[in-house]
Length: 63
Image 1: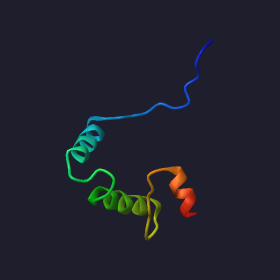
Image 2: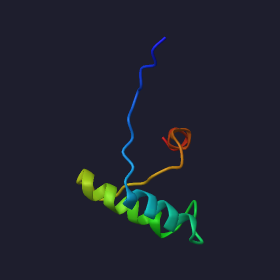
Image 3: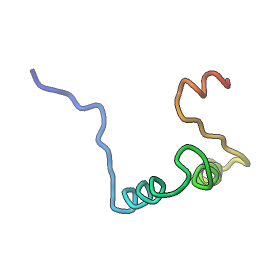
Image 4: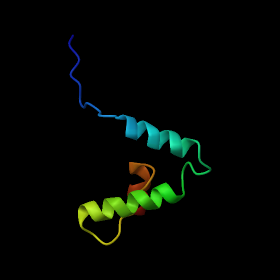
């Protein structure tokens, strides 16, 4: 039986550096990287604010 991949990730050295930097910081689940990501996401989408969640389930609870 042949497997059909549903996605193909693209992870570069900058992605690895960013994750390592976060893991080595005092902030894993909160902190400045979350705010930075929300701001970049809002800018990318052309909206004033964006709020991110840790999971799809958490976002559904808020909705």
